[in-house]
Length: 317
Ligand code: NAD
Picture 1 (spheres, protein in one colour):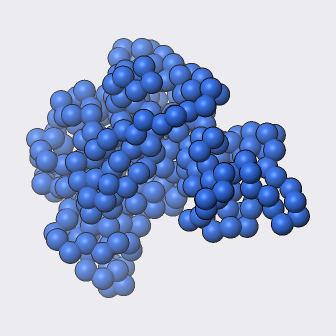
Picture 2 (tube, helix red, strand yellow; picture 1 turned 180 degrees about the vertical axis):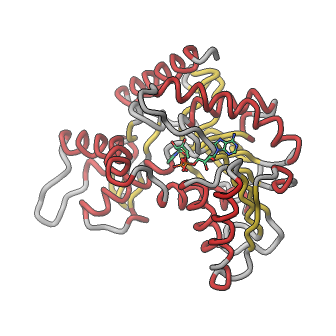
């Protein structure tokens, strides 16, 4: 995407995810100015230098930043990737509690410096942290949302495209719910071009059966585990997914993306953030789309909401 007006993207956290997002944003020209912030002075300086040394080959976008939060002032979009690392023996819940603390103190500082920005959470557990960040910011629900299942949806579309030998752009299928174990695909509305996925017949006459669909859903939900086992973190695909969401905001695209914002009265769900198809434009989540889920999908949506509600309660929310 090529942006013509001066647009500023601030990335909080210059770890694997934050620096990959900056790299993707520079190459895609998602914003004219990319600023990285991290409390680790040497790390953020090194990432900024390494990225800047490549900008001869990335057209007009610039990159800067450091360990001074004032560098992010007046950003149009702030993406939060800063987070604590899991310590040996530490549970997921204990890690979440540390990230809740980080977010609760960061958000007011960020809002003070970027009062008009749209805030995008990537740090995990991103759905839970969206509720925390939205409350700590005092901003409307649409202005603080998580990348949610945009990444998981990209994984699903890649898998389906590969399996059915069609272009990824011709696969229309979404993962919704928690960005995590309780996420699920909306098979009832999935299509290949205009053909419902369940009616798709391969050249050899075969169709995707119930067991195939279950296996695909499992593969998507478990994808991060395999990558983390092999290389310690996932970074490239989330970097690209994050850049894509940033572009939807900066270009006021009103693109339909499965992002996670705090819901009120969505299929009876209140005060929980999870991913559902949403219109993303200059104001962030402009609208959450009401979707007809089939009975199975409705059950999975409610159970994903319960999982998240329980996590929030355990963290005192
Ligand atoms: P990382 O450890 O490489 O980087 C985290 C960075 O945050 C570090 O550089 C650290 O110094 C910084 N940091 C920590 N506390 C800070 C604070 N208070 N202020 C400023 N900076 C601070 O981790 P990573 O691999 O880049 O992952 C970052 C987060 O992204 C994790 O929570 C991870 O689970 C999450 N993630 C989310 C998705 C998604 O789809 N939502 C995908 C991949 C990773």
